[in-house]
Image 1 (cartoon, rainbow, N blue to C red):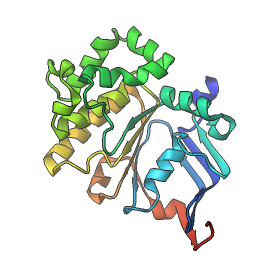
Image 2 (cartoon, rainbow, N blue to C red; image 1 turned 45 degrees about the vertical axis):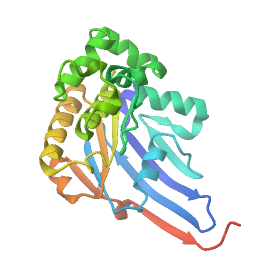
Image 3 (cartoon, helix red, strand yellow; image 1 turned 90 degrees about the vertical axis):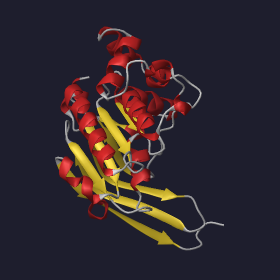
Image 4 (tube, one colour; image 1 turned 120 degrees about the horizontal axis):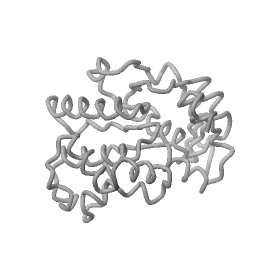
Amino acid sequence: MEAHALADAVNLRGVEYRWNTRNSFTLSIGAFQVPRGERLLLLGPSGSGKSTLLSLLTGIASVQAGSVEILGQPLNELHGSGRDRFRAEHFGIIFQMFNLLPYGAVIDNVLLPLNFAPARRARTVAAGGLESEARRLLTSLGLPGDIGRQKAATLSVGQQQRVAAARALIGSPEIIVADEPTSALDDNRQQDFLDLLFDQVDASGATLIMVSHDRRLAQHFTRVVEFADILTVSKTEGSNR
């Protein structure tokens, strides 16, 4: 645990990842670090590898070469189930399409990650109880107090987005990863969502890594990194048949 406390949130060195397709693509990153507590925006166009990088950071995908170190833990030293447990405990993820269970109640969607993360669950219980903490987050993110028993499928896009944020924040994971979370919102709702998200991230002391193609978001972050500055993507035609 001391190593987790002292290490950068993210430390990538000599990373290579190859897509197993007919036209073989290789993503390469020489070195990339994210200090703890940073609000980082990664900017790049569609198809530039943003989602692939997030998959590598969270252990959903594994590199073929190099090291992905998260909170001092090299992910390549963990087997698949170990990476799944590590991701559940240390990452809160806001997916672009939110990935809520449509016929599940809002409160159940928020609490879902805690079924796979004992430490996050224990922190939530200690903070005041599972449903109480879920409702606090929902209210803090601007949702009405009686929304908890509604089905996720009945919510507006903006409401679903905030439920997804509460699910990512529950139990105070160290790193929040957001994949184009504002792409479906107009400018006013985008600003409101970011303000609420930043308030909650700051309150928990989490590191925030957001990827987007929208350069207008840059003013809200402590650091902005262009994808093209940290990675290269090469292509070999017809290498796999």
